Image 1 (cartoon, rainbow, N blue to C red):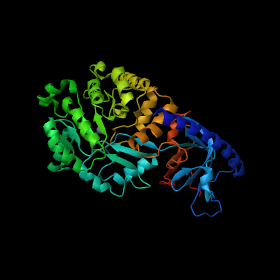
Image 2 (tube, rainbow, N blue to C red):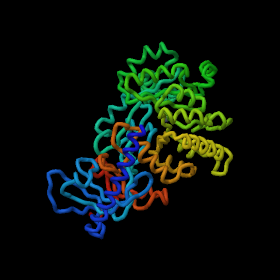
Image 3 (cartoon, rainbow, N blue to C red):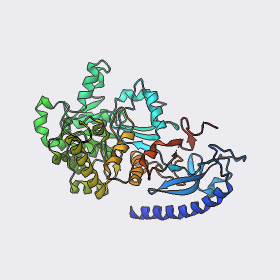
Image 4 (cartoon, rainbow, N blue to C red):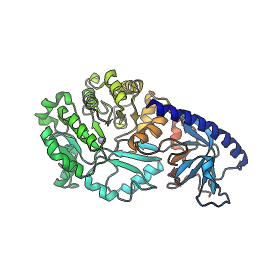
Length: 449
Ligand SMILES: [Zn+2]
């Protein structure tokens, strides 16, 4: 949509000049000493919050501006009316909240409350869970997708072939006594070996109200061989011939499709079928942690270009292997994985594919993913910040006005003590968190209030 984009770009530029001018005037009027929450004695029918002396991320650069918040949104100064409270940001750095585009840990579990508190504390407000036990969602009611909580999308059970991943995970949980038999096929996963199976099970899949559809491709270039050999239980997936039927049905139902992939061939199959999201970078974990033939995992330029043209996003999920002991940073296996990931990310970047940060790290929340990607050096700090705070949240919730610090967007933001474009580790220097115009969790640095 070039017309829309040019309008937005021109609009942003024009607005930024206005803001810069307004910011200077207001900054001169504001007190020069820092108070975390400096109430201005004024009254108004609608509370208006003024944020002074902050440097706000826009298009990968920080700009000094004054911003206003009313009704949960950023508003422009004319719409703001009487300011009822203000915060002097003391020259600190403001970014949109972070996002985690692949994690299964938001589910019913004893540690759910502490996990959600950590997401908020780390500034990760938007999460995509691409496979969850549908009954586990009941335990989350009132805890996620609430104004001051983490917003989460759920795929429910994924579509795979008989004996395919993640059947192995479900069986393990049944064996441990954590799950029941009814939590396996028809709940945590759907076994589909033909179009006939898909047609028969589709109404039941939709009846569980998934937010999107997840399907599994694992070494689809060997689909026939793996299907007949139980040595590959849990290491096989859908018949590649079924994938485009899944996509057509999902799109007809208004649902997006995310595809698990292992190899470059899986990536090609998913892209050719028109999926909306690739849930992993090929080779993210190799074959059981090994990388016998790196070439089998190299994304081709052609497939990356097609992904870019059709708007298919790619979630990274490289933190898992980053955390695996590969015998130290100098081991050949470590170097082989790093080289593969660097090559694939470069291919995606050069093709203009939207790369999303997601870790698939059950014990983490996406921070490890950002740190590992930064260490690879494919994206600059500024590019990585934009991917993490703008591209990823907007891909998870495309209908929402999030990820951009401008009037008209949800007033959700994080304040950092130091500049993450200069030093990426500054993403850990969180002092203030706001979601839809209201403070979230405990606010470090505001303790003296
Ligand atoms: Zn996963």
